[in-house]
Amino acid sequence: MTVPTPSSPATPTIVTSPDALTQLHDGWDYVLAWLAAHSGDIALATGAGALIYAVLRFARRMVRKAAAKQSDHDGFWATTLRVLARTRHFFLIMVSIRLVVGFANPPVVLADIVRFLFIVAAAFQVAIWAREVIMSMVRQRAAQGASDMLANALSLINVLVSVGLFAIAAIVVLDNLGVNVTALVAGLGIGGIAIGLAAKGVFEDLFSALAIIFDRPFRKGDVIGFDQFTATVERIGLKSTRLRSLSGEEVVVSNMNLLNKEVKNFASVPRRRLNLDFGVTYQTPAPTVERIPDMARDIVEGAGHTLIRCGLMRFGTSSLDFELQFDVFDDDYNRVFMHRHAIGVALMQRFRAEGISFAYPTQVAFTADPDGTLISPWPPVDRAGRPAD
Image 1 (cartoon, rainbow, N blue to C red):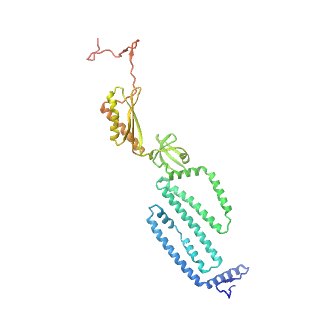
Image 2: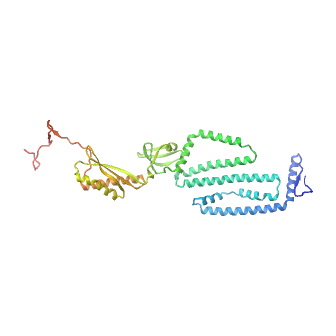
Image 3: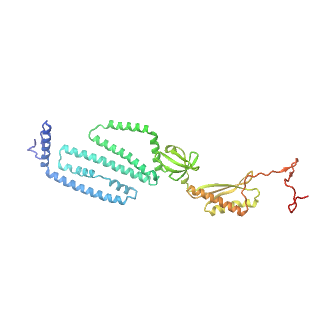
């Protein structure tokens, strides 16, 4: 039986029997004696705990409303609201009980149970908060990333982060139960190393894909130069990236190989310098040749571009070779390509109006006497075009 001592009625004692049923009966009597001895303190602690829980629940409701208004915003305040909005009911209950349990003078066993449940609630609640903080940072960083694979990547990151954080929370709980977690941590470490070595290639490509998403060296639709060819990025996957070359075929490259080599991104260039080479015939008069750079300037600047230089480069085998160099302020490679096309067409139209002929490979044969005197290959004609006598 559980009998309070006469000298101190507020402190019940218990005399136990080895029989299990008797122990259960004695334990129940002990609880009843504690309830009777501390009924006032228990009532006061219960009321205080209920009040604390109500205040905490009201505060969480206000936080959730404020977080809903900030759902489309980023930053420290919006992230803090989203994190606090993830607070669970069980954690609020255990916080309320933990704050008032000391006022009820509970038995040691009950106090230990409350302490353990509070540790469980706190460990997993901290894991939930940490996951929300990490995922908020990831979402903000990837806000301008690749849209087609972002959802899959975020889901995968969420799984990895959740497994890691909740595993740590479980280890903390087991440690508070008195379990030796050293062997468990070592086993998890060895298992992680084994899995990492077995799936080395998959993880390398996966983390390379995440690097492409968050570092953004290129995006879908960008024109890049990679490994001796130029291609358009069509899709960025978790394992590989698909490129469409200029000749039309699809090129599939693993993400790790793609990042291990030099990649030239033509889409991130605010302006592009273009060359346009052309040649005119040797029959073009020298004054006209001298005016060709001015004609090119009028065409280029009239189209809104910047002329860098235009002039005679060399005397070719069958043409006077010119080089035209100009800048186009546009970051879209396809539009830049069409700008160069438009400049070429405008140059053709201007030359036709000026009577300037573009050169093409030609050969002229001359007949000569043994002493080197040139002989006309055509018979002499009079002014009317009739053969001369």
